[in-house]
Image (spheres, rainbow, N blue to C red):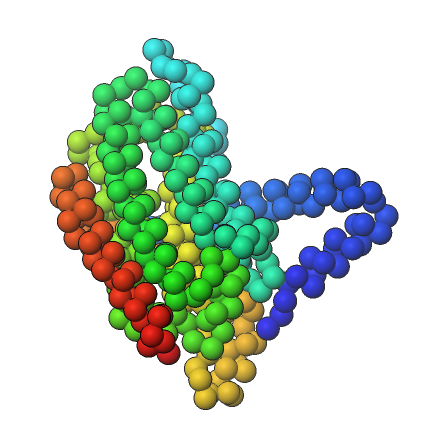
Length: 358
């Protein structure tokens, strides 16, 4: 399988050949930053189109089909429309925090992108505690939502923000415990190490029942963490108008909208890294010819394909199950998911300690 670090190392040595170190660093940071923003925007536009088509299929509709072939340009048209919308000035708000909140939400998801390995050697930063960094960064987004609700000086936005804070803090426990369950199996907190540990067989197959339970809990908690239906209580239209971003318009509203879809991709991407090998191809022990064919598929396609496929599960949750009440949502986490996760962590510890995994 092709190693992208060969290309990045060559480009770095090429720049260092005729530029000082500080200039090389600045140029590389600019290229990475611009590339990251472009990928962020294009991925969000793809996800908007993807969910509309997915929702249409569930509801026996066609979905977007007017702008461009098969409606492919509908998301771009909507983005252009949102960019030219007016930022409506509002009185009696905390203007600084009101303006800061959407950038904080987008910044959190952009920072999480930095540690996701998109392919073999295609990773911006490779920490030895990368998975711990990912958990820490994902917690920043809730601050932006709380600031948005509080600074808007509106009862609906404040209720939505408080719901979101309670929901995200609660379900982060289940996400963290599911991740730690797989870290126990991998024996490392490095994301690259976790992926390379699945070279012969993905963890979802190696870890027996505890890995399967951790995956199911992670997907449910991840759906709640991203405020997606049926856990979209912070922006319940029938109760709170639009929740914490009721007062936002134009580009600022667009930032919240983009961050929701990108957070869904990050949740699905982390699930693919922990349970399905990330960019690692499907290998079956003893099937050498099959494994060689799988190695020809580029690692980027493996990672993005798995993330997009797992995102379909989150979308399926939204368009299949009815919205729950806030008390039911929190009771489900504290009474059922959290005890199940703690028990599952202990079982995985026993499995690893006695070498019972494959």
